[in-house]
Image (cartoon, rainbow, N blue to C red):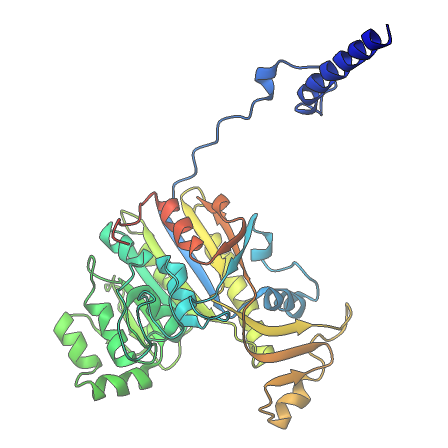
Length: 398
């Protein structure tokens, strides 16, 4: 009899175990529901982008974004980009080290292939300054191949590592005289359509050393290279400006006016320097960039446009003091007046280690295809995010 009771109890326990998961699948409703109602709905078709805008804050790690909000608004989480719904953490290392420079960092983002520090959109077979690796195809090159309009805008030299990685290939980021002319001799399409940046003096010196110059390039390719944004005539729909400095706010809005006339869509990259070796300047750059991003967002249709914000690498900054209503950068003026060149800067509430660092950086997104930005991932994933947003496949050879 005891054995029979034990068998009956075991049978009841087994039946209960089989029933519980069915209720757990619909835990919001205590009444049992048909099994079919608990099955997940088919995944929605991801939104397809006609346009992609990549905003790159050079060296803006997570701590820099936080500190920029504190400087600009006196409170955390007040930047426009911090309201975007899709967030991930992007790992930035090159193939052989833990800490990235801008060359590897940006090359990885726009080509989907990690490389070595100092190398511009070539694979890891490259040895900086000594040996080329195979060129890796950037999103801009795919966009040119698909007939889209393209633009690259930067506060920095247009031949420096971050913008160069988008349109050029070189085994050494320092070869500006070799890098800049590649904008006029594209591998795909007719090349980058709009190019706005700084660095005119140094690029000019290297072009002269290579036996050419701005005038020669302009004549050879029938594309004027203006020294100032204001000099661009309204009739020029593919302008190139290389100045001593670049007003990226004005440049971005001018480029957007041209790009939004593109019949097939566009690909736009905007870089704004955010290094915080001068902490006030670096953080204010992030605040100003964020305001530009908000303005751009107000001018696009998010149902067919992906906006993506990230950094190529992080930087050594930490907020370790301060209070609401107080001065975040207390002690900055005295440090600036001292002319100190120390690698480590100790202010009252902030410490700056004036070097690149290896931790992940934020990637934030909104618009068509933005839901693919989530979790931890290598920075090469952002290439896939942009390509999949457009609905393009990577070339088999890549």
